[in-house]
Length: 82
Length: 124
Image 1 (cartoon, each protein chain N blue to C red):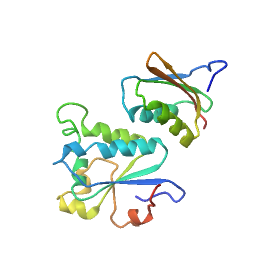
Image 2 (cartoon, rainbow over the protein chains, first blue to last red):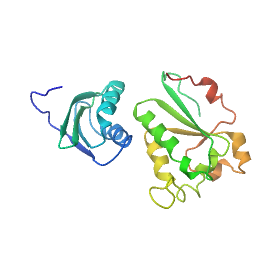
Image 3 (cartoon, rainbow over the protein chains, first blue to last red):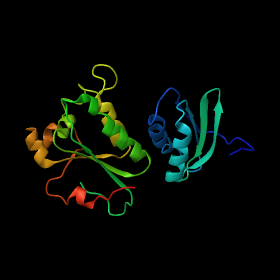
Image 4 (cartoon, each protein chain N blue to C red):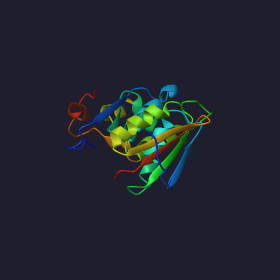
């Protein structure tokens, strides 16, 4: 899941310090505030966020652009599909 | 309150514990919210002592951690905000000497409707 060029982020959702399932719940709500095609960046420290967001994007059809762990914080980029 | 006819993926949670067991009050709402976030169609069915958790005069006074942490209303609204629907068992209202008017807004009753449980399907 490498990114040649980082996509522009339209909204940042900071869920650092929150545990499962809060990042998923907040992402599900936040993505609905974006227009299709826009990109959400989720920040989270819960180690479950990686499998959770893979499952969530796979199930909801939103596009997982990448997950990067920077100093213990996961940066998850998601493009709203519809 | 019934299931939509087109949903392929429905989850029904059944809440049987009430205000006497606040430690069990919030988790069903949490689980239901997570399922709704995954875009399942979700209902929570309150039966036995479950309907007592939806009393207007209760939701701000109890929570899973007592006086610390968020009140039950927070967990309820987290779930309903994601589309979770709440359904009470009509005979269980009588069991707890409650009427629908005493519950928070938006709660549906099973009375006089097609059976919710018979129309739900197990989810793998």
